[in-house]
Length: 94
Image 1 (spheres, helix red, strand yellow):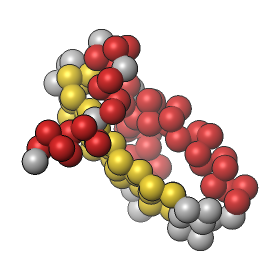
Image 2: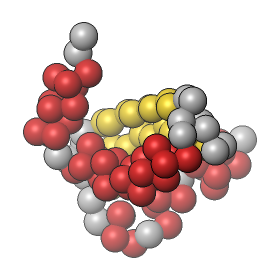
Image 3: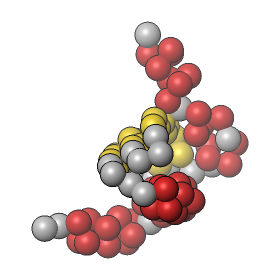
């Protein structure tokens, strides 16, 4: 069963460039014109384990398009920069 899930979730590891800095990673997302969701997990070659999930609802078409355009860059920063992760955590602390 794990192999079945792995083939769906771990497409990031099919890219040779990702194998240079990631030991293990996977993601699953979904969207409609007004909803955008994503869950992502990774273990870096430095043994940092990172999990992230985000959920947006009631989006306008413009908001959805902007988020989809920015999400890859945002995710890479979260995965690659501990300083950026701290900044995001601080911004989300209520």
